[in-house]
Image 1 (tube, rainbow, N blue to C red):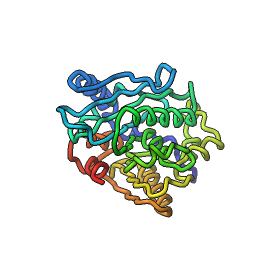
Image 2: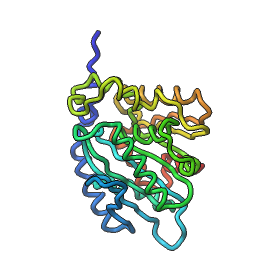
Image 3: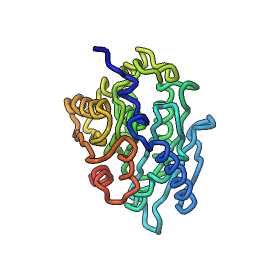
Image 4: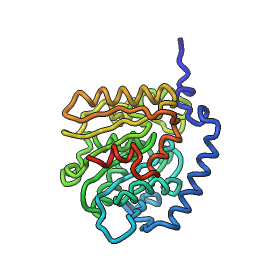
Length: 270
């Protein structure tokens, strides 16, 4: 029986009010930028979209460290401006938050996007001292997991500071995406699918990784989460797989706005 791969990865089709949620993200992000302590559009490269925003905790106490949040959109949609509000929870818990943009397919490829996120991490880590926590949603979950792969060759001065990577609804195996219609935009070939699937690579030694997914998500995302955690559990890593009750692919990120939510306490309390 042939599988409908388009339906298996069509999150907007599975969540009837998806566009309403997207519109709310933009509005909440704009309001948050206007009310927060921040530094916007810090260049991490020379490209127009190679910029990140930093959001700082209020008050005079020193930051506890860096949280980098990488947005989703199947590597072909959105930018950092729709996700500023997701910094709210971590800054209220005393952390500085970096949210980068990146180039989008088909104008670039996923290999280059991964490179850009490494550059963003390197620049943000220079700006903010202390431990580093990485999280990302959907395509962003894939990208932060890639930053946890040994073959990224990230300097030890940075990897030694990474305390936890938490992927939210990540796509960790790109091979099924090649079977979807959206690959007409992504142009993932076999070589890129093999090179850029975190599930096929060895994680950093002693990495702590949590795969977080909504319990109400499409079956394929729950499978991806479980499969990736199972594979990385075979190394010298601390791995947790969690399905968040009642959450779908888009509501699952709401916990990033809520200080002391289970998601944030899981990620930050090391």
